[in-house]
Amino acid sequence: MIKRLSLYSRILQSFEFQGIEKISSAEVARRLGLNSAQVRKDLACFGQFGIPGFGYHVNDLRKQVRGILKTDREMRVILVGVGNLGTALLSYRGFLKQGFTMLFGFDVNPRSAEGRTRSNVPIYDIRDLESKIEGQRIDIAVLAVPVEVAQEVTNRLVKCGVLAILNFVPMRIEVPAHIQVRYVDFSLELESLAYYVQDREKAKRE
Amino acid sequence: MIKRLSLYSRILQSFEFQGIEKISSAEVARRLGLNSAQVRKDLACFGQFGIPGFGYHVNDLRKQVRGILKTDREMRVILVGVGNLGTALLSYRGFLKQGFTMLFGFDVNPRSAEGRTRSNVPIYDIRDLESKIEGQRIDIAVLAVPVEVAQEVTNRLVKCGVLAILNFVPMRIEVPAHIQVRYVDFSLELESLAYYVQDREKAKRE
DNA sequence: CTTACTTTGTGAATGATTTCACAAAGTACG
DNA sequence: CGTACTTTGTGAAATCATTCACAAAGTAAG
Ligand SMILES: NC(=O)c1ccc[n+]([C@@H]2O[C@H](COP(=O)([O-])OP(=O)(O)OC[C@H]3O[C@@H](n4cnc5c(N)ncnc54)[C@H](O)[C@@H]3O)[C@@H](O)[C@H]2O)c1
Ligand SMILES: NC(=O)c1ccc[n+]([C@@H]2O[C@H](COP(=O)([O-])OP(=O)(O)OC[C@H]3O[C@@H](n4cnc5c(N)ncnc54)[C@H](O)[C@@H]3O)[C@@H](O)[C@H]2O)c1
Image 1 (tube, chains in turn brown, blue, red, orange):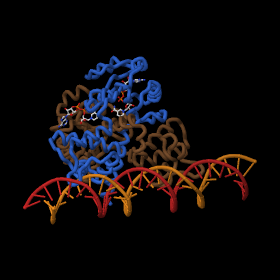
Image 2 (cartoon, each protein chain N blue to C red; image 1 turned 90 degrees about the horizontal axis):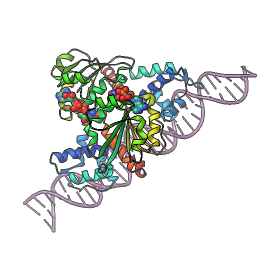
Image 3 (cartoon, chains in turn purple, cyan, orange, yellow; image 1 turned 90 degrees about the vertical axis):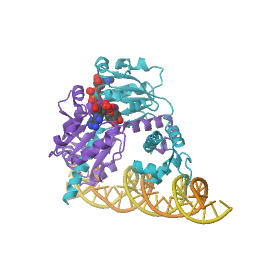
Image 4 (cartoon, rainbow over the protein chains, first blue to last red; image 1 turned 60 degrees about the horizontal axis):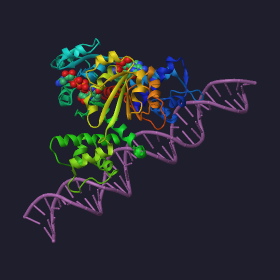
């Protein structure tokens, strides 16, 4: 549900960019392939933002949604594991947009990692993790290390006070209950795609 | 649901690797953070693979699950857009494992793309898309191009007979109903993580 | 001000997914 | 063979999510 809010935020941004000032739940829904009642219900969880018979003011609604998602504040992020994937993530400006600040990268081999990237995010040795982020508020750690060390690195991150982890490693990591973890797992998507391609008949089972 | 099957497949592989021959739904569930009834129900959709009072033979079950997912066959994949992210994807052996064959990459600038990668997948000019994949069976296209060209490239892919698209571009793409599309959208995950992080801090205060 | 129209916000209905709970079917072993 | 366990497969119940449908509240225009 929160992911849909994030989609609303994105589409509102594009409406704003196009100079559109007024929008209906039906139009938002159409653009995202959703039902208009869904859009209204989602928003209704957080307040009444619309005007019956008119719709929503794009600017207003966007501000509201960003407020709900808290993308109007700074989120401090670090990256652990600056390999193939980590390098791509570092130079992705999509992360830097709207409130996310990438502070540092960490790797066992910071030299060669540094060589790969063209971003100006400093990359430190993973040995210095604790000392570098000591006393800093770190909201989110992005995890892109090899599977074998994922749990060990996670434990260290948690000890350092990281509040949330975006995990690209195809493995379940164990964390205390108060730590948020989100998984991004391409192979899963690929495999399910494969299933539907082969087997369009049975695809209804989802 | 299919994504969970994919998880089962992965965990069974790791059990096999560890030399474990027998497994219960409860143990699979524990390892994946699921309910054991869920595991049994999922499998029950496709047949009866277990032995009451015993559990499942790891080898057997893994074969069955791979058969269901069709990861026992070859899936032919191409990559379109060999930039930061595309490069990482090309050198990800996780894709090459189990049945996925990455045939070619395509880019507007194949020279500089070629320079970036250390894989031996050939990279062609996007102008030659049609001629290169003419008459070939291509199951899945991985899309990692800039937002502005995503729809246009998608249209060409569909015309070329691609059956499914794994879309990394943070935008809804329009395709005919018989084409499968799956979205991988990191920003959405990051934003929803941000939401829960903030919420937790608020929760502590109250 | 009034009439015709639009679109919201939201209970109620429907649909989907997850969990419970237990009979049935097996194992293990004396 | 029989008794004590274990674990499956699966209806039924519970939970969660989506869609319907409509009164209420607005706009627009004469
Ligand atoms: N490359 C992809 O496209 C892709 C796709 C999906 C998932 N993944 C997953 O992401 C992770 C990284 O993949 P990759 O392709 O970038 O691999 P990679 O080997 O290129 O990168 C891993 C990086 O982690 C560093 N590292 C190793 N041990 C470390 C430690 N203890 N602390 C900090 N850094 C350490 C390595 O030096 C390396 O730079 C893997 O778990 C992989 O399964 C990758
Ligand atoms: N880099 C990331 O970590 C990341 C994360 C999430 C999403 N994405 C998305 O993935 C896409 C690619 O991101 P990126 O960081 O790799 O960008 P990028 O600019 O590095 O790569 C895009 C590549 O596409 C090529 N290209 C441009 N037009 C093309 C066309 N018509 N046909 C074929 N190729 C074409 C470019 O030459 C370039 O090599 C973007 O839509 C981005 O939003 C990237």
